[in-house]
Amino acid sequence: MIWLLPTVPFAAGLAAFVLGNNRARRTLLLSASAVHGGLVIEAWLRPAPLPISRWLGMDEVSLLFLGITSTLFFAAAVSATGTLRMEEASRQAQTHGQSWASNTQERIFTSCLLLFLASMTLVVVSRHLGLLWVAVEATTLASAPLIYHQRHKRSLEAAWKYLLICSVGIALALLGNFFMAVSTSVGTGHQISLNLADLMAGAPGLDPAWLKAAFLLLLIGYGTKMGLAPMHTWLPDAHSEAPPVVSALLSGALLNCAFLGIMRIQSVLTAAGLGEFGRQQLVFFGMLSMAIAAVFLLTQTDYKRLLAYSSVEHMGVLALGAGLGGVGSLGAALHALNHSMTKAALFLIAGNIMVVARTKEIGSVRGLLSTAPVAASMWLAGILAVVGSPPFGLFTSELMILKAAVDGSRWWVAGGYLTALSVAFVAMALAAVKMVFGEPSAPAVVTPALDRRQAVLMYLGPAVLLSGVLLTGLYLPGPLYSLLQSAAVLLGGR
Image 1 (spheres, rainbow, N blue to C red):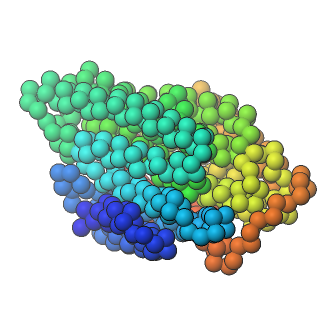
Image 2: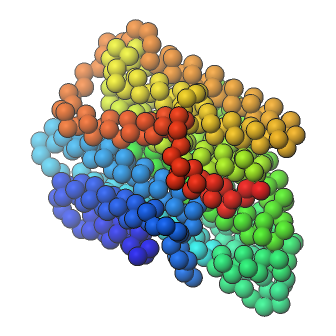
Image 3: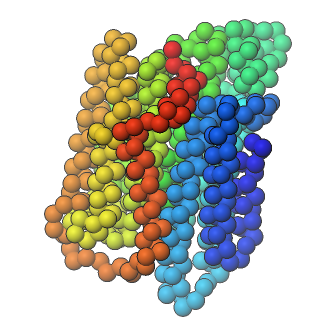
């Protein structure tokens, strides 16, 4: 019943827009997320990947990214429930009752959140390049209103920037699909469909020139959505201005979807005997993304933008690992899992810090350990995890990618890789130390006290995600390791 995976959140998203009660919408959000998670678990428990149809299907890469997406969405849904309750209470206090505008605002937010899950799920289970393109475009349309949720000038600018830049990228990806279709007819003399199974079977007969051009267009197009430099310019604004729950999904789940689209094309290139050409481009854009992100990390004064540029860096790490191949591909698969959990947790914690500090400025946040000890402890743990400190899982995945560079005697890659990681470590560690330790720079802002239920909703998700990153650094269960190995082969491992 693979079609249920995107259909359940899609139907729930439509229902959420129709419902008139905020509490019912939040219940629907949690219920749909739980059902989606149950369907994913059922897919994971099957002894083999689901049979592949012409349009929908799953392989090991699909199972990996589907598990990541569903897990992150459930954590985000739990946090969103607490956040929406606080927003509603604040609006009622200001307007002395429920206003039509605030009800509509939450209706749009909940509905688009579920439609966002549906579109990301469709990306993961697509087995046709045309459907994959449609699904990636749908993620843009579903998530743009979420970025504008706060309804101020900066969020409007970020939403439009996101729409415009990603639309240019998706247009280039569409042109890449056209070039792919031309490569099938020129190379074989007859038209091959853009179904992945057909492309893989007919890959040796595809025209090399058209296929390379198609790959470059698709790499730039989907690389824009993935946040690879220099196509990353939408990402810092969108991640910074979106609500923390949305930022968690954008960074932890959406970027993976674009990466998966690129790797689908790379698998066709490999089957056609042109895998080395694709890997060279991935290494180039991976190193470029890490270098540019490292420079900007040093100058950030907004801790949400700091996390956003960290995402650009880690997308570079993903591309580099896939480009190096071998153990690097295994490292990339593990890195996708670890980065998603870590970055989603950090954005959710950033939202909790904003509740206490009422600012996103790093320089205005001091002494969190005394004013918000739980958030401060989790923030520090998340920063240590995202910069690749042991024993967190990102240390293992980054070490695998370094080993791939050394094994291939690519010393300039290894040197640049370590330099970029070191700069990112210094930038993020300095920001975290300034925010967590010392005396508060100003009297603590009086914030409404959280009841126990709200506290659980706001801290449970990031706590579970950070625990998962710690676990993958200490021990990888056999089934998960086997899945990662199979996914690495499909990601281009040699």
